[in-house]
View (cartoon, helix red, strand yellow):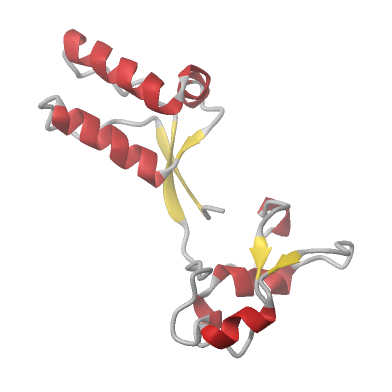
Length: 144
C-alpha cells in the first residue's frame, strides 16, 4: 500500500480487519487500510475478531493489497467491429450492464471493472472478433 494512500477513497461500508495475528495481514487490504483511518472517524465496520479462530489457514474476507486495471470510456469500443456485430454487442452489453450504466461507461462517468472487461472480451470472441476490445484509457486503483 502506498504511503500517500488517501483514506477518503475507502467506501463507508468497507469491512476492516484488526487481526494482526493473521498470517495474511501483511498482504490484506482489510488489515492494511486500518492504519490510515483518520481520527475523526468514530466508527468503522470490522470483521468479528472471534470469527478467525475457526479460520486459521484461509480467510473468506481476505482482500489482496493489489490495484486492478479498470477501463474508462468505451467511445471507440466498436469502431473496428463490423456494423452487424457491433449492433449485437451493444445490445448484449446494454442487457448485461443496463442502459443507464452502459451510457455512464460511454461518457466516462463510470469505470468498467476487470470482470466486465472480461465479459466484453468474451462477447467479442463469441461473435468471431479476434481483436481485443479498445477502451479510451485505463485507471489503476483498488476494487473495493
